[in-house]
Length: 414
Image (tube, rainbow, N blue to C red; front, side):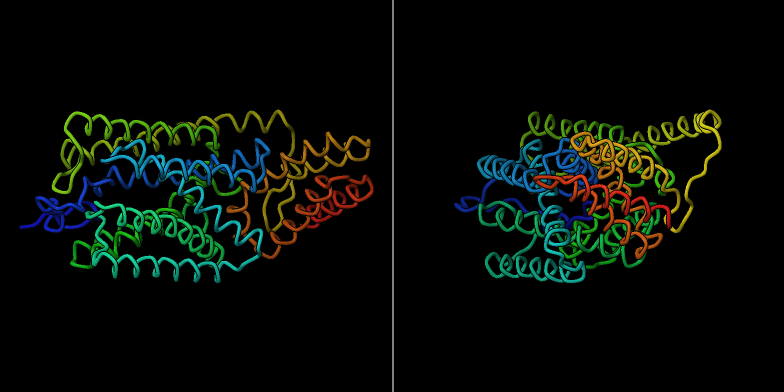
C-alpha cells in the first residue's frame, strides 16, 4: 500500500532517478511535509513585513525596495541553481525573496498602474496556467518530486513566483469583495488548505491540490500576520510587527536549521526519502513551532490588555471619533501634529512626521477597509494628497496646509 506525504504526492510517485540517467540530478527542493507548510506560511509574513519595513520605515520607497529585492532574488537563484543538491537555507532564502517580489509585482499592478484586482487575478491565473502548460508539454510531468534537472527547476521557480503574485491578488480580492476580517480570513484560507489535503486523501489529483494550497498560503500568511500585528481597534491582537516578525523568524530559523543539520548528517533528501527524523517527529517539530507562536502571542496580548485600563484611566476620558471606520483618533493625533508643523513653517519636520501617518494608515488598511470601503477610499485619497504635497520636490506651505486641513476635515466627518 502506498503512503502519502502531508498534502504531497503518494510515495509511489517518489521514485529514485534511473540508474545511469545523464539528465537527472539530486533533488533540489524539499519534500512536502508539515515542516514545509509551516515554514512556507511563516516566511510569507516575514518576507512581506521586511519589505514594508524597508519601503516605509527606512524610507527607501517601493521603487528602490523592489529593485533591491529583485537583485537579492537574482543572487539567491544563482546560488540555488549552482548547488548540486537540496540546501535548506539557500532554498528557503529564495522562497522568502520570491514571496517579496511576487507580492510587489501585484502591488505594482494595483497601486501604481491602477489595475483592478479582478483583472490582475485573471492575468496571474492565466500566466500560471501558461507556465504549467509549457512545463507539462516540455517535461510530461508537473510532479514536484521530479525537480531533478535544470529545466524542471526553472519551471518550478517560475510557477512559484507566479503563484505568489496570484495569491496576493486573489487574497486581496477575496478580502475586499467579501469584507473578511483578519480572524475570519485566517480561518477561511486555513480551512481551504485543509480541504486540499482532504481532497488528496480522497483521491483528487495531488499536483493540482499542492499548487492550489501553495497559492492559498500567501493570503493565509498575510491574514495571520495582520491578525497578530494589528491594533485591537482594527480587529487584530495588537502583538505588534516587531514581536511578530522576531517570533516568526525564530521559528523559521529553528526549523530550517534542523533540516540543514539532517541533510548534512544523513545526506540529501532524495526522491525516496521521508521527512527529517520521520513523519511523526516532523509533525511534532512543526506543531511545537506553531504552539510557541500561539503561546507568546496570547501572553503578549494578555499583558497589553491588563495594562490597558490603567493607561486609559491615566489618559482621561476618550472622545474618539467612532464613525464607520471606528476609532480614528490615532490618525487624528498624527495629522494634528503635522498640521502644527506646517503652520509653523517647518516643512522638513512635517515631512518626517507624516511618515508615521503613512506607516499607521498602510498597516491598518486590512482592518479598516472591510468596515466601509467607500469611506475608507475617501480617507485614503486624502492621506495620499497629504503625502504628495509634503513629498513634492519643492513643497509649498500653502498647498501642504490645504491638503492637511482637508484630511482633518475628512477625519472629523467620519
